[in-house]
Image (cartoon, rainbow, N blue to C red):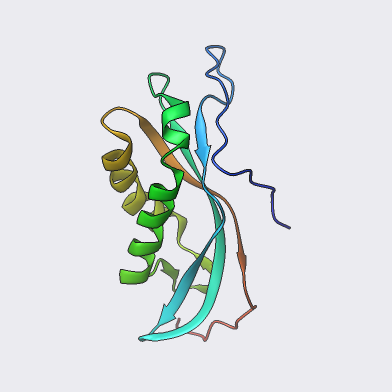
Length: 130
């Protein structure tokens, strides 16, 4: 089941170890490509966790730029999980998106990138040997 994601929401910083500041991206359909062939799309809900020093209100305005960067990266080099054609590899996505988000947000604003949830457009069998 999918978690609800609100567009580019930001929560106030909480010094008691609470959720902190973040920007949720609108859900994005990313391609699953195997041997040059499109086999599926996976809809991902991505959260950019911000540092305490980040200006969350200003970064909410940049949500379309973060989303555009994600789509462009996934189109050039899909984040296909070779073990499951119904999922995006979250480690690869976070590793690729973190520097892109930092370039858009400015230095010291992005703490981490996480996938809140993912849902395939279709359930596709992954062949043995991926």
